[in-house]
Amino acid sequence: MNIKNFKPIIYFIPLAVIQLTVIPLIAVDNITPNIIFILIAYYTLMFGQSYGTILGFALGFIFDIISGGLIGASMISFTLSAFIAGYFYSDNKIDFNTKSFFFLLIIFICGSINSFIYAVISNSNTSVNTFYIILFEGLLPGLYTSLFGLPFVIISPKKGLS
Image (cartoon, rainbow, N blue to C red):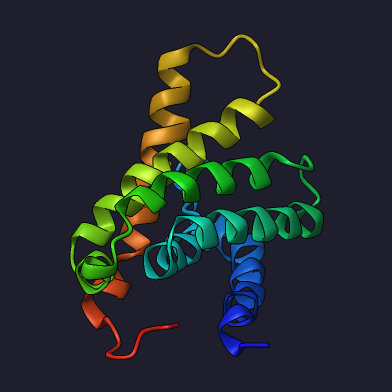
């Protein structure tokens, strides 16, 4: 087997620990970034839509199990948002998509969709209006997640994480 297939899982383990322990400490009015989605989006833009969709499904399922949350919520949101991020994939534009500020735009769009889908699935409060869910559960976490993608653009390793 190729080591390429196991690298996302190796990177996922410490990111999941950070997502569950450190990230809640830096929440701004219950708005948190999703650093696991940055990893999924990066690999989607590196290897394509099919790879990213399967990776989103697998890592989302594992994250649902270890986080103790609603089983399937992260799995569905990661899968759908990775599928959408896959539309930005192009063999000719891998460096542009992963090492420029366009990467932050992709993370903002797909991270907002990820947060929105997760909020719709896991929200049990029926009295919350649609505007609140779109803004505070979708767009603002997507913006916060894209800020955490900034080191990928600034540092942008020559060889990448692949």
